[in-house]
Length: 218
Picture 1 (tube, rainbow, N blue to C red):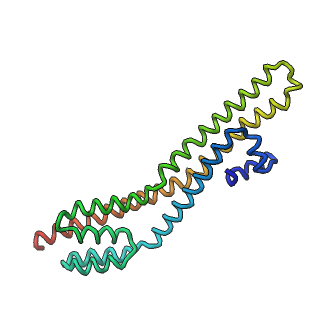
Picture 2: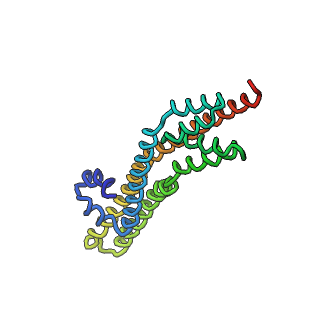
Picture 3: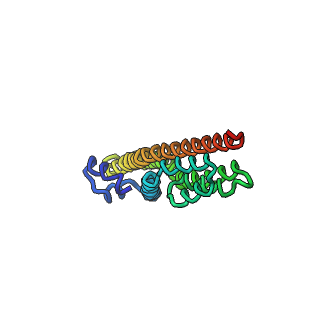
C-alpha cells in the first residue's frame, strides 16, 4: 500500500503515513492486501521471466525428431540436459510410455502447468477484495460524517466531518490503486499461462502424430 499510495499522497499533499492515518482503521486490511499483492506479483513475474529464459524450443524439436527415428533413449538423454519445461514433460512421458504414454504426458503437463497457477488465486482475491474494502471505508467514513452532522453543532464538528470525508475518499482511492496495480501483472501472467498451455498442447499433438506414424510403420 505504501508503494501504491505514493501518487495519492502526492496528489493530496500528504505523506504516505498521513494518508494511512487519515484513512481510518479500514487501512489495516488494505495494507495487508497491498503487501500480499506486491509479494505475489513480484514472485510471479520473476517466475515468468525465469521460465521464458529457460525455454529451448530447438531441444524440444530435436527430441521429437529422435522419437520419430525411434531413438527414445537419445530423446530422453537430450531432454534431461534441458531446463525447458516441455522437455521435462516429454522426458517423463517417454520414460513411462510402457504404461500409458497419454496418461504420463497428461500427468507431467498438469504438474508443470500447476506451477504457473501458484499464487494466482491469492492475487485474484486481492484484486477483488481491495475495491470492496475501499468501498467499506467509504461507508464507514460517510457514517462518521453523518454522525457528526446529526450532532447539530456543525461548526464544532467541522473537523470530524472533514475527517469522515477524507476517510471515505482515501480508503476508496487506495483500494482502487491496489486493484489496478495488481490487475496489469495478473493479466500478463495469465497470458503467459495460456502460452504455456498452447506449447504443451502443441507438443502433445506432435508426439501423438509421431507415435501413430511409428505404429503404422510409415
